[in-house]
Image 1 (cartoon, rainbow, N blue to C red):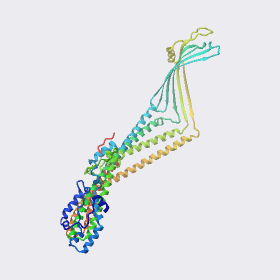
Image 2: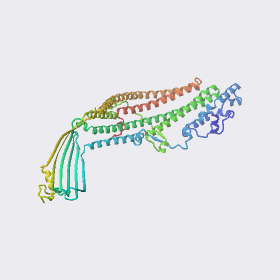
Image 3: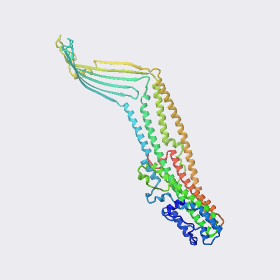
Image 4: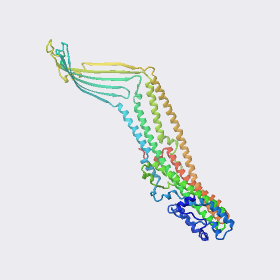
Length: 586
C-alpha cells in the first residue's frame, strides 16, 4: 500500500509534519475528506493529495502528550497507514476512467421489454423455426392436390427389311404422340388416374391397313388399399402431423417471447437492485468516513483512546471493499441486461445505463393467475398437447403399416381408330370402316363401341414384418413418453404458480416490514451517535448500528425487487404476462 501511495500521489504523507493547527481545523479537514469521497460524481478526484492527518505522535512532538501515549500512537500510526490509505486509494473503479466513460442513459423497464422483443436473438431463432414449421403444412396439403401429366413426342425410324411382305428394302415409320393425364389422392386413401392418349402413325409397309393411322384412348383407373395404409385417418396423418408440428413451433415461439419478456424484466430488476446497493454502499462509506474523522477528533481531544481508531479505520476499509464489489456486481448485471436486450455492436455494449425506478404499485395475486387459467393460456400446454397428438397419429400409422399390403385396382377405358386406307398389293385399294382422320377417331372413341376394363388385387408381404413391428413398438413408446411428459408439465406449472403466489404474498409483506426496519435502524444509529458524543457508547457500537442500517436498507431493496420478480414469475407461470404488459401476440 505504501508503494502504491508513492505512485499515485507522488509522495507519502509524513507522520511528523502536522502541528496543532491541524487539531483545531479538524472540521474543515472532515469536509475535505467528504468532498474527496463524494467528488462531483461520487468518486475522489485522481491525483488529489489527501489532507494531512494529525496523530498523537505529532502532538507529542509539540509537547502536549506524554511519552507513553506518543509511543503508543506512533506504533499505531506505523501499523495503520494501509488501513487509512485504503479509503483514499480505493475510490469507485469508474472514477479512474471518468474521462473515457460514455454518458449514461436512463432506461425504464418498459424500454427494456420493447428492446428485447426487437433485438433478442432467441426470439429471432424461434421465429425462424416457427416459419419453417408452418411451411410444412402446405407441403403435406399438396399431396391431396391433383397432378397433371403431359407427353408430346415425334419419332421417325427407318429400318432395313428382308421381308417380301413389306414391299420395300426398308420400313419407314413416323410416330407422333400427344398424351395428357391427371392423378389425385383422395383423403380416404384411393389413388385415381385419368389418361387421354393420342397417336398418329405412318408406316411404309405394304400390308398396313391404315397409313396415316389415328389412335385415341381414354383410360380411368383407381387403386384402393384394403389392409396396409387403409382409411382416412392414416391417409391424412402426414397432414395432421404437419399441422400439429406447426402448432408446436408457434406455441414454442410464444413461450420464447414470454420467457424473453420475463428475462428482460428480471434482468432490469437485478440491475436496478445492484445500482441501489451501490448507493447504499456509498452511504455506508460516507458514514464510516464521518465516524473515522469524528474518532480522530475525539482522540485528539482526549475523549477517546487511541485504540478506538483501529475499528473505525478497519470499518472504513471494509466499506470501501464492499463498495468495489457492489460496483462490479452492478456492471455485471448491466452486461446481463444488455445480453438479454440483444446488444451486438461495441457502441451498444459500451453505452452505460441508469435504471429508472420500477412502478411502486405491486398488486397481490389476481383472480386470473391460477392453475386453471394457466391450462388455457400457457403455450407449453398447447404445445405439449400438439406433441401428444403427433405421437398418437404416428402410432396409428405404424399400426396400420404392420399389415400386409393388399390393394384393389380397377380400370376402364375407351378407344378409337381412324386413318387413310393403304393400297393392298394383292387386292388393290379396299374400303374400311375406319376411313377418316383424327376427328373420326375421336368420334369412334366417344361412341364407346370399343372399350376395355380390368379388376384385380395386388399384394406385398414382407418376410415376418419385422421392420413394421419394430416401427410400431417405437411409435407406441413415443406415445407413452408424450403422455408422461404431459403429466409432468401439469405438475411443473402447478408448482410454479403456487410458489410464485406464495413468494409474491411474502414479498409484499416484507416490504412494509423492511421499511419499518430502516426507519428504526436510522433512529437507533442517530441515538447511538449522540450517546457516543456523551461518552456513553463506543466506536464499535456505532459501527454495528451503521451496519444494521445498511443491512436494513439492503433488505428493503431486496424485498421490493423480489416482489416485482415474484409478480413477473407469477404472470409468466399463469400465461398472462403478455396481456399484462400490453403485448399483442399474433
